[in-house]
Amino acid sequence: MIETDDPAAIAQKLAELKLEHRDLDLAIERLMVDAAADELTVKRLKKRKLWLKDCIARLESALIPDQPA
Image (cartoon, rainbow, N blue to C red):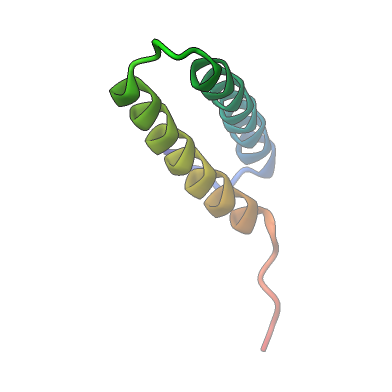
């Protein structure tokens, strides 16, 4: 994924992943409307979308500073 602690680099990657996630969401919506859509393609896109969601969550947590206990 990303091998840096630089908040700017993390924020940039986060923005890219969110954009890809949104684009996948739109593509899945279009395919779901099409009755002739390939079911396997839709499943693969949904799996990729879930993976992106996990990556986004990890990056967002990396931007949160650690709180002392």
